[in-house]
Image (cartoon, rainbow, N blue to C red):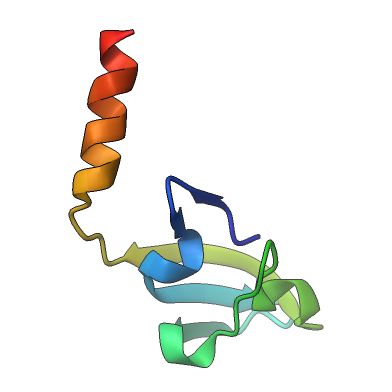
Length: 75
């Protein structure tokens, strides 16, 4: 899935993923190879997809998220 919260989605932060196919083949896919959609991921439509074994995320600082977390912790 392409989960999201606080104005970001998983697809926004994925750099690359490593997968295994049902045939036992290992592969690595870059963000540019992946077509994420609203609450969907390209893995849902891969016929030979078995599992994601690793994911690399590229995180960015978000002042909005920081403020929201601080407000939440105050309450």
